[in-house]
Image (cartoon, rainbow, N blue to C red; front, top):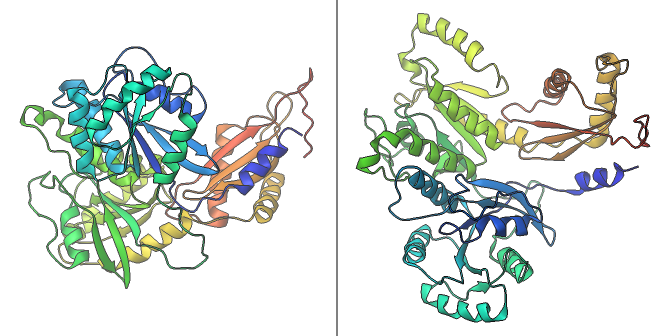
Length: 462
């Protein structure tokens, strides 16, 4: 019965919302990825003795003393970096902006460099809790060298050896202490404002919509695309409820990198989505759905956030455009038919009052939990009515299903063998038809039973 412990683990993990985020940053080749591997307890982050191996922000699931969190590995940060190095540094800065705690790694064998001191200035601007780590302290003599790192002004250096594990347990204890307190699990109790990312390609009307829902001029509105450079979080009251519209601090576009404008806009979008629970993706209903629109939608879906699509500038849409738009939606948005759609005009205020109810519906789906009994009863009836196609003389059976988490809803199917991708999509579609999940992505994964003998038969019973 090798599956039994998995059932128990999956059913006891409780998700009460987005887990806290720990960003690991530092200049190149100080051992960030080695530390990430130490924290997550497995060799997953790529490690080479060459600067610049890690280029993007890479998140990993981690757990310590019963507390779950996400640890984000970043590429080396350097001031005044150019070309690819500038993109890597920008990713690291986004990681800092979206983190709850920052772990700043310094090489104790080298000491504090000018780059480290420049990084400290960047970290101070973020106003995030920072834990200073003196890595590569492989022996007691090197631990003594860490005393000089007090000069960075970040408090006591935590001496560790990520490679050998020295001091890693104490570091993890301090990381947990610095994380925000987990929200109390109170059914129907009061909670803070829901976090909404307002995203979309340039010039679709994001600033106009923010001004409309906040009933004041909070954002600069200009017909020139890309006017918003440094958007800030805004508390807005809609339909009698307080909402927090979130965004990351914009990265200023340097003159010599004007061609990278779209790249930096993409980073800001990713940061806003990661910090939010639900995203409002604004599309210009008077224009065709573009590849850039598709990229923004993909970012939201891949981040696992609830989704509302707002077709803005509806006041400019005539009868002919509506016919073409319906065909575009059918063709371009067919992969996300579950997304909630509203037609609005930020300029005139048309149907903006529909936004808050749509957000509530999407969030309710995002946090929906299906009881295990009801899930398996429904699944048994479904698979009896429509069995998996026979492949090679036999068809895999689904032994058991459980909902492993919420925000977004995640389901695990324990089976006698791999399922066809088409059948897996069929189950996801039927799952939505039965239980809803309007406005929320859902994840359905398969855990085939391990083969234990020559005949490939395991010991679990259906």
